[in-house]
Amino acid sequence: MVIGGAMAITIGSIFSLTGASLRLAYGRSDWQAAFYNAENALQWGAQLIADKGGNISGSNFYSTANGSLNLPYMASATAAGGLVGAWVSIVTNPKVGPSAYTVTAEAQYNMKMSKVQAVVTYLPASPVFDYEYFLNNWGWWWGGSITGQGSQRANWNFDFQGGPTVNGLLLASGDITSYGNPVNLTNNLPFAGLAASDAVDMVFSDVQRISLPNLTSFNLYATNALTNQYGGIWVGTNQVVPGVWTNAAQPGLYLTQSNGAPIIVSNTVVIPGDVVIQGKITGQGTIYVGGNLYVAGNITYANGPDFSVNPETEEPTARDQWVLANTGKDLVAFAVRGSVVGGDVTSGDWNYYCYTGMGGNSWGMEYCGDERTLGADGIPHTADDNIPYQATNGWSNASQYVDAQGMTTAFDADGDGFIRGPYNYNTDFNMTSLRASLISGYPVDTNKVPLPYSQMASANIGLVEGVYYCNHGFPMLVGANQSSMTFHGTVVSRDEAIVSYAPISFVYDPRVNSRYCNDPNRYIDLSLPYSPISLGVNQFQELPPDPAPIL
Image (cartoon, rainbow, N blue to C red; front, side, top):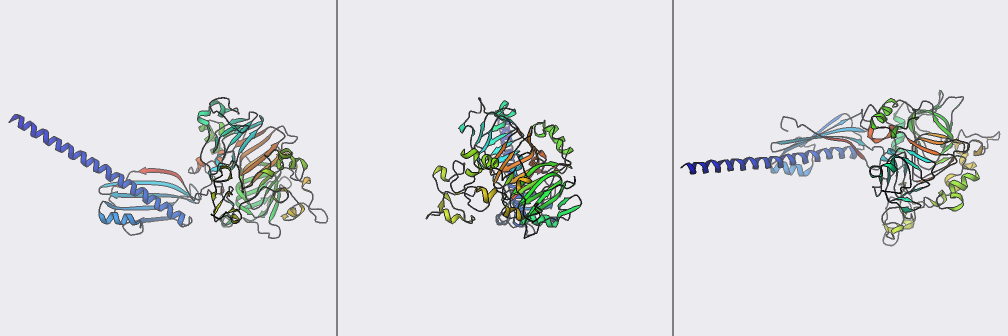
């Protein structure tokens, strides 16, 4: 009897333990189902923002109970039992930015509930602005007098010669090379600085490519410019551009300070033609340029941050304090559909160094930009690997390069919707009399004939401040008669040929880094060129579920 009683107690305990284990297993399964349904509801809400083009205001609530959250599988799962229901809330989040939203979702499966939340941005700024120097092609730093104070990245190989200094992250979608040969990242590095002392944590090859923003259309940026009553450009008290420049006869604009008064930039400004600029600038905003941006001389902030300490190379706490202390200082960006051209583009030296690459060394603008056969660019299925690339109907002239099977070796690498050949000096860069005549405010003689560009521009450039982005080339001849040549901000382009007579430094301005995009105390909305990806997730977290069941 004693043995039988003990066995009965033992068997009962086993059954009880088995039942508890089964309940726990079912509970875990139900919680996972609730989490996945909540996550799907959140994704549905985020996609709704994209589908409506960001045209969502105030607070919005959708649920399976009232039929507004109409994912078909949820209706089937609810009818079959198990899924009790789900809801999603979309609320504008102006603290993060004008196109930011907080999306919250919750789901109940049997008796288990899960709640998740994300902060998303519609058309977020492209991540290319996280780098002081970003090339959508081969990156090349040739010369020991080049210094990078921040992170740099290339969408293919990054080549080094002469031992430049890299004080920040170094990333390449291809290889890190020296004189065209891949290097061993553990020893004999072709550069110096912080990246060389900690290559394991700071130097990376074969990273994912980042697509450049597409500036084919300025419609969205023009809308932003026209809807902001405080947007525009002033010189002193004279407003030159009220948001969008609309002079059809002269779509370009000549900008320089006047009698000591700096060029004031506020919010988003759109200029459809070429822009020539030099002198002091102040304010916060982005100038969208439909043609080329001609940097004729120094561009310096009137009320800029103190760059005597390179912020991006400081410890994270000190860097963040620098950003917080300088959120109200000058920060001007230039988003250029064409190219950024620095120095006197009409000079023989500019042509020799920047365009022909010292007379034909294959690195000048004359040899870059040909999208018909791109060479070893790291883009799959283009001419370098002899595998045809599937043609894209969006390219306006793709039919010229498509074979009978609908394949081509061309690729629209800069994302402007057009397969382009090599750069042409006269049509792409040179400041001809005709080009100058289309620029309002360009200096003229007594007969109203545009003056030679050499009277306005030179290579005597020692400081350029601001964020500079362009879809195409970035040729500059600078640093003449200077002890140093410094960029304070960011340089982003497809192709680059910056030639400096003086030692050159790129110093990153971390105020435009995406790490601050969800911090209202540090985030500065410049309306930078948006990413090709329509939605960006700034933050994701799981929240304690609501105690009441979903009705």
